[in-house]
Each structure stands twice: as structure tokens, then as C-alpha cells.
Image 1 (cartoon, rainbow, N blue to C red):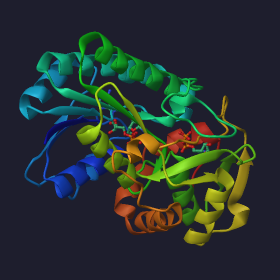
Image 2: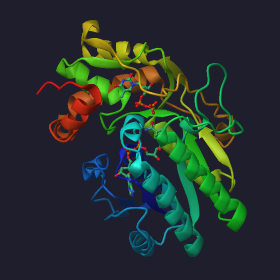
Image 3: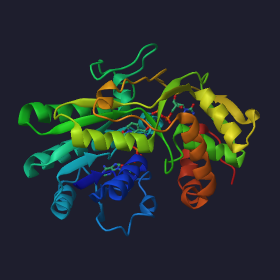
Image 4: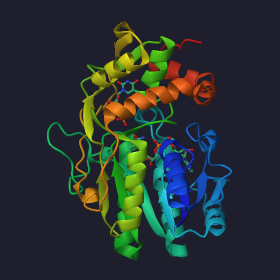
Length: 335
Ligand code: NAD
Ligand code: TYD
């Protein structure tokens, strides 16, 4: 297939791009704005591969999107482009509204004009929090944060283009991803790097919030399945095999990284913090997908990846991230 992958320089987008180039022989053009979270380093092992092309540009920029479509002549657009950190959406929601609402709109218009299939990468956070039981694709949408609210708006826009214009569009909603190349503002890479550096491990509130963890290669395979076998107009959830409380995740990381329990620090809770996410993946399993990576194994591999790939995270940890960290946590990182 020929694909235009928007937001492909980020964590999951680059994992998906790698998978499609290597395992499926696809031609992939990435369109990415390269925000703080998007990095050309994420293409270090695929940049020279035949079939790979990178274009820097924003999804809300019509000219950039048209140029990318002309260069790629894709059969499908896969949209990962997003601002993705809940804490940043609470501090500064602007870019979330622009990228998710306007960006998705510009891509949908372009897909319609060029007669191209469309896949929107979405999140379980659109359903809000669930104390018991599991969200299905039929569950009500009750987003809590500016991040999840703007992602929900994007999903609704995608569905409106299917209903109104017949655009062959599908949505794939993932649970919390982890794995190599994840920017260290998110729970797992933040805790791994802090554990390895002897920094404190900032657990929000009581740490009993539960997340459903999926490895980024499993989510990328689910997106590929939905792209190839999904029915236009439908939504498909893709959750991981394991749910775990944050504090238990942090304890596992302490053990794997050889850190100390005394590094744990319970800090002020996130405003509007969702207590639990849980996702039923029956519908995408019926398409032949199943997660392959158990959390226990994937987490151990992820800790090893961060241990062995300081070249990837050192420039982040010594750059603007330090300012972000100080603003968010009110303390500095170890040099
Ligand atoms: P990420 O923050 O690592 O990467 C986002 C990418 O989008 C970056 O490369 C960034 O430069 C790019 N981008 C941002 N704004 C852009 C714009 N206006 N135009 C073009 N490019 C832009 O995020 P991620 O974790 O890889 O998430 C990718 C997608 O998956 C997002 O849509 C996110 O909502 C969804 N998702 C993420 C998770 C998770 O746990 N990380 C779970 C479910 C769904
Ligand atoms: P995060 O990785 O930001 O993903 P999301 O908010 O999309 O689920 O956070 C995962 C969980 O970890 C969430 O319950 C918030 C919590 N958390 C902490 O306790 N401390 C931290 O420093 C971070 C970044 C997150």
C-alpha cells in the first residue's frame, strides 16, 4: 500500500511506519510538524529505506497537506498527528484545539477531494473514566481533559464525513501505549529515566489510578488490521492484555531499573484525573488481531531499551524538557 502517515515522527507513528515499511513493504510518506515530541531521530533505522519519505509540515496547513498528497499519491491517510500529553493540555490547551479540530478537518477535506481512505488514530480517553466494567465502541463519549475532549471532537468530525459525504473513514481507539521512542513526559518513560538517574518518582495522588497497557507494536498492528479489514464508518477499540495501578507499574520499574522504593514521592494529583480506563477489543479481535506482548515482558524490554539508548534520550533530557519538568513538578532533574 501507499500511505500518508501524519504525525509519523512521534512515538506510535514512527513505530507504525517502521512496521509497515519492514513487514508489509508499504510505501510510507510521513507528514509531521516536528513539535517537541516529533523527532527525525525516530527514523534512524528506516530513513534510507526505499519507499520512505519525510515531509515537514502541519496538518492544519492546507498547502502542506496538498503537497504531501501530491508527493505520496496515497491509497490512505493515517492520522496520528496530535498533541498527546494530558498535563500539557491542562496547562496550555491552544495547540490541542488547533491540531485536533482544524488539523483533522483539513485532512478530511483533502481525503474527500483526492478520493482517499482515512484512518483516525484515537484514544480510550474519549470514553472518560470507568470504575468497573469495560468500554465498548457503543459506550457514551465523556471526555474529561482538554486533550480527550479535542480528540473526541476530531472523532465526531471523522464520523460526520462518513455519514455526510460517504468518506471511507474508520477510527481506531487505543489504550495507554508504552515501548521504545516514547517521549519521557509520559508515565512509563518518565519513571524509567528518573529511576535510572536516582531522581524522585512523582506519583500523582494515591497512585491507585488504573491504566490498560498496550505495547506500541501491538497497537500499530491493530491500526494496520483496521486499515486493511475494517468497515468504513466503524470504530474499533484496541486495548492491551493487562490493567495495572500506576503505583504497581512504578514498583515494577524500580525493580527492573535497580532503583529504590524511597525514590517514590506522592505529589499533588492531576486536576480532573480519570481513575480507570478499560477497553474491550472484541470487535478488532474479530478481524483477526490479538495483542502479542504481555505487559511484564514488554516493560522489561522497554526498560532495557532506555538503558541502552542514551543517544536517543540524552538530547531530550538536557534540553527544553528540563524547563517543562521544573514547571510541571516544581523541582529540577539531576544533571
Ligand atoms: P507523540 O506525542 O509521540 O507524537 C505526536 C506526533 O504528532 C509528533 O511527531 C508531532 O510532531 C506530531 N504533530 C503534532 N502536532 C502536529 C501538527 N499540527 N501537524 C503535524 N504533525 C503534528 O504521540 P503518540 O503517543 O505517538 O500518539 C500518536 C497518536 O496516537 C495520537 O493521535 C494519540 O492521540 C494517539 N494515542 C496515543 C496513545 C498513547 O498512549 N500514547 C494511546 C492511544 C492513542
Ligand atoms: P500518562 O502517561 O500521562 O497517560 P494518560 O494520562 O494519558 O493516561 O499518565 C498515565 C498515568 O500515570 C495517569 O494516571 C497519570 C499518572 N502519572 C503520574 O502518576 N505521575 C506522572 O509523573 C505522570 C506523567 C503520570
